[in-house]
Every structure is written in C-alpha cells, then in structure tokens.
Image (spheres, helix red, strand yellow):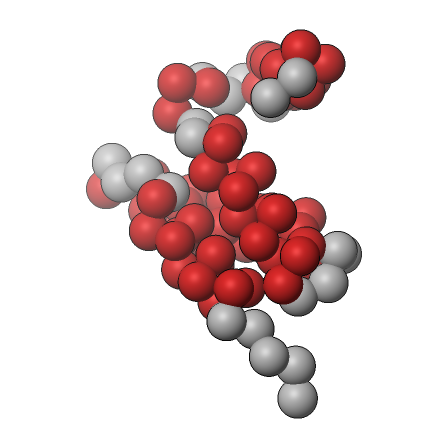
Length: 82
C-alpha cells in the first residue's frame, strides 16, 4: 500500500471513528482487485461495500471479514458472465 493510500485510509478511519486494527485493509484490496479483474471494474467498490456490510453484521459475534473476503474473491475468480 502506498503512503498516499495509507494516509487516506488512516484519515478516513478517523473520520468514520473506526479502529484500523480491526480491519484487514489488504484483504479488502485483494477482493476489490479480484472483482475488478474477473467481473467488471465497477464491481470492485460495490463488492467491498457488500463484504463490509456482511462483516458488520458479524461484528457482534467478534468475527473478522476473512470469510466474506474469501467468498467474494472465489465468486469473482470463477465469474463467467452468461
């Protein structure tokens, strides 16, 4: 991750009152890459939003986003448009 990206993520997390220690930024970047390259570029932001939404729903149980990222990456990697 570049310094600009790190600065942006830190500033955004602060603005949104998020603890970055709870977020696997690289996993989110990886799933965005998979969606952008395997589906279509605009799928990247929507995919990361949906992963985050699903992870947020699991937060009360103390779970991380690894399962959501893995599911989204696997789906994107195997995506075959009809």
